[in-house]
Length: 526
Image (cartoon, rainbow, N blue to C red; front, side, top):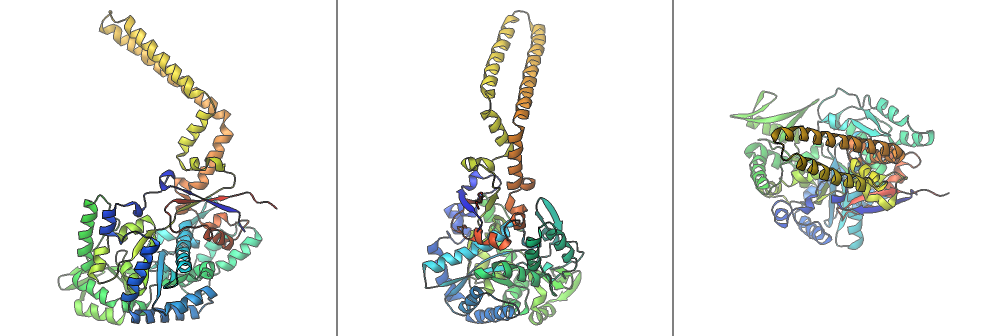
C-alpha cells in the first residue's frame, strides 16, 4: 500500500486554482444551474430523472452496453452495474474527457475517481436508488493537438500522426512507437506491467481507449460510454432535427449568454447557428444554414435530403461542445455531471436550452482538484509551498536574517539625511535644489545597490534551501502550471504501479468538498 496522507486546503490558499462554480451567488445558481449539489439534492434529482427518463431509451442503452462489454472482459463490479441499469431506480453520475495520450493528465484520473466515490457514498447511504459511475469518451472531438501529448519525469511525449477528423476514429498507427518511448524510462518490472496495460490491438483509437479505462477503473464499476454509435445517435434524431429546422440552441444560448454577462460571468463556449457537424472519413465538417437548405464544405444540401440522411445515417452527425451535453442527457439516466471549471462554465450556458428541448437539466459539480507532493516536503509548512515561488524565497530570506530590520533602519536614516540636506540649502535658490537633488538620487542609487549586494550574498549562503524550494515548486507546478493539468500519473509510477496509485487515491478522494486535496507521500518503513 502506498503511504499517502490527505490534507485539504481552501482553493483560495492554493495558487493556480480558480473559484469553483459552487461559489456563485444563490441567485446565479438558481438562474443558471440546478441548485446546490448535496446528498439531499442528488436524491431529489434521482426521483425526478427516474420518472422522466424513457424506458425505451433505457432498453437501448442497456443493449448497447451489454453488447459492448460482451466483446471484452468485465469485472464483477461492472457486471453488477450493468444488471442494475436495467432497473428503473438506477441512475448515473457522469464525467468525461478527451482521449488524452496515456490516460493523462492527472485530472482525468481524479475525474473518474470522483464519480466512482460519489456513487459509492450514495449507494452506501440509501437503498431507494442505485447510482452507476459513467465515463463519457469525447471520441468525436477533432482537436488532435490537445490530446496528442503527455508529460512525466519532466519529459514530453507526443503521438506523431497526420490523421484528421474525429480522434476516436483514428487508426493507432504510430502509437506503438510513442508508447515504447514512454515505457523505456521504467525499470523492467514496472515496464512489463505497463506494456500489458498499453498493449495495442486491432481497432480504432476509441476502442483502445475504452480498454485502457476498463483495465484501470473496471474493478470500481466504472462504465465507459462512446457516443459515436448509430443506435445511440438514433435516440437523438428528434433533437438533431429540431436543431437543423429551428436552430433552437443558438436562440436560447444567445439569450442565456447575455444574462451571464449581465450577471458578471464570462462566456465559455461560442454558439453557432447550427451546433452539429457532419462526419465523413477523416473530416468533421460544420453544417451551415443557407437560404434554401444547408452548406457542408461549400456543397449545398436541400432540407429534405439532409433530413433523410439524418434518419438513415444518424452516425454521420455529431453534436458540438454545446450540443453534446444534451445528447448525453438524452441517452443516459443521468442526475449529475462532474467536470472541470471550463466544462461547468459551458453547462451554465445551457439550462434554458434544455428546457426548450424538454430535457431534464442535471446537477453539475466541479471535480476535485489535487496535488501529489514529493516525500521530502516539510509538512509543518505545507500551505507555504502553494504560494508564488518568489514569495517563498523572499520569506525564507527574511526569516534567515535581520535584513528587514536593518533595511528599515537604513531607510529611516536616509530619509532623515535627505531632509537635513534639503534644509541646509533651503536659502540658496533653485540651482542648489538641482545639484542637491542629484546628490540625493546618488544616495538612493548607492543604497539600492547595497541592498541588492546584501540579498545576493545572503542568497548564496542559502542557495541549498532555495534550490530545494525550486525543486518542490517544479514538482507542484511544472512549467508553472498546476501539476494536475500537466503531469501524467506515470510520473509517480516507479516504485508503485498505476493500479496501486489509483487504489490509494480512491481511498482518499472526497467528492463533497471543493477544497484542494493535497496528497502527501510519507517515508516508507521496512
